[in-house]
Image 1 (cartoon, each protein chain N blue to C red):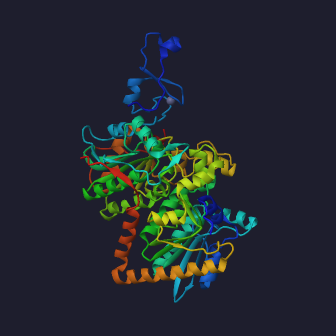
Image 2 (image 1 turned 30 degrees about the vertical axis):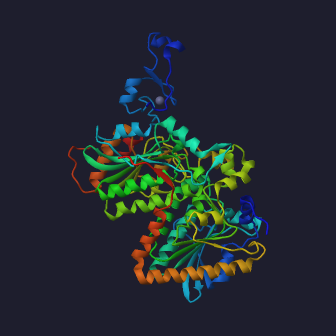
Image 3 (image 1 turned 90 degrees about the vertical axis):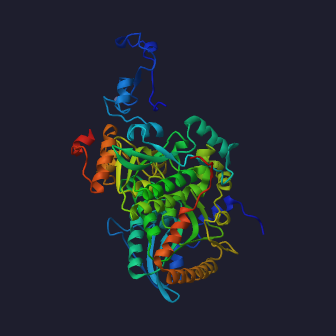
Amino acid sequence: MRPRFRRRNVASKGTESLGPSIPDGLWSKCPRCRELIYTREFERNHYVCPRCGYHARLTARQRIALTVDPESFVEWDAGLSPADPLRFVALGEPYPRKVAEAQERSGEREALVTGAATILGVPVGLAVAEFGFLGASMGSVFGEKFARAAERAAAEDRAFIVFASSGGARMHEGVFSLFQLPKTIVAVESLSERRLPFITVLVDPCYGGVTASFATVADLILAEPGAMIGFAGPRVIEQVTRQKLPAGFQSAEFLLQHGMIDAIVPRPRLREELAHYIRLLTNQRSTSPVSFVTRQESDR
Amino acid sequence: MMQLTAWDRVQLARHQARPHTLDYITELLEEPRELHGDRLFRDDPAIVAAIGRFGTRSVIVLGHQKGASTTENVARNFGMPRPEGYRKAIRILHLAEKFGLPVITFIDTPAADPGLESEERGQAWAISSCLQAFLRAQVPTLAVVIGEGGSGGALALAVCDRLLMLENAIFAVASPEACAAILWRDAARAPEAAETMRITAQELHRFGIADEVIPEPAPAHLDASGTIRRVGQALERHLEELLQLWHEHGPAHARQLRWARYRAIGLWHEDPVT
Ligand SMILES: [Zn+2]
């Protein structure tokens, strides 16, 4: 699967400097700075634009592949899929049909993928949100898979790493969606009891109940550069309050400045940083030296 | 009696003349004193806190506070707490724990404040911390939804050992208007959304999320004192049960029961895959 990053048939657009012989898909265009990037270089750079640093959105599977040691991922609870507790129908479309479409499109059964892996040899439990599945809204399955993963990580003595992203609530599951908030917070108590690290990485976009629950009670809260993070979305805020929102509002950089997150970590460094943080928290020496990352470096 | 629709209940739950938290505090507590401030930033008038005598013991009360008039509503931000409101609740909850006092909360808010400053001060962080503080509370906790249970902003004070709802109260993941705007692409279809979302006290009781529905023989805005009295009686009964539980099994066990309750909520399909 490719990230959501617009590709462009350069040849057909007739960009003279690149010549007409370049095959389709060899070049990608950064949606922020409009730079044409050689796709192989883009992939090597973890789907970060080498010119402006834009972090393209990833699927859960891409995220896992970029983060964990090769072949180390073993999925947990892949058999869970959404029920329809409210028998919800909107505009003639029943919720199960919407789910089926999302499953077809994303290749996932739900908006959260969980499992065990190692990162630079460090054993972890993982939970990764799939924004391509109904905007990674948190329904019963998301909450249950999250809770089981946190508890299993605790039982297996693993640190728990969560890539949090969400567009908000799973409205089709109504109040069941809402009550996943306390459920996820209860579940991470199992990690606290065993003094195991719980680290969340907030990735673009991260809003609503996910931000207002497990994502912000972690031991360490990291974010990717430029990620948009908040409780209410910018459109809602503008509509309700008619306030003009400043540039950079709700960006990871804004949150760092306002004291809400521990650090911003560029994606290509994330693997090393996660392993390093876990080792530091659990009082273990690193097997390979990791350089100190300054504020300036991570701001780049 | 006529069957009320979900949308009727929404109107009743939001009725301005319905008794609000301070009415319950005044009527149910003896010698109450209001407590102010989060000791971090400022006092949020959308969440009130009080200590007072309830029956034979001291209790702490926390609740969302809407206004009884438009002027008061503006001053109270329509009962929409800002981060400092949740941080005040956390502070007062810790006070209750120090003195071993039960905590009663009254839930009545359209939502947490969705403003620029609230985001700057970490609205999501304040809500998650408040949820965690309530889930960890070392004292018995009881919540009553007295009006509008609007989303995470309401939930933050509601994750208690007992969750009671007045007959015409609602609890929803989003306002019916917002849900209609998104899923029906038309906010005017809120009545339909309200029905589909299953937000009434009766439905939450059926789902096992609410423990009890407190009847309103007459809607609360027409019978404030009767409503408050019935809420007081229900609270007394549940508080006695909880105190007995805490006394017999200890705080650790009581907290495990609370955790198990919130850990269990949800419905899904599971195929045997390994
Ligand atoms: Zn770029």
